[in-house]
Image (cartoon, rainbow, N blue to C red; front, top):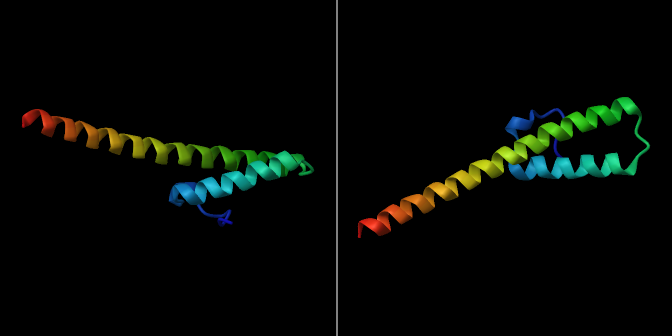
Length: 76
């Protein structure tokens, strides 16, 4: 499991996703006190945003590569 003290923005996609899965499981299992549940929820929101940023970045790179490939193909 990922170190909960780690800043979300320093995590890889895989680390953030793994921790997010664990948080969701913990929240779904119930039984956590309200204060802990809120802290888990907030951490989960941060992790979800980091995962989305990674995915958006990957999509942008793919779209950029496709555009370059298309421009190169049109030049020939």
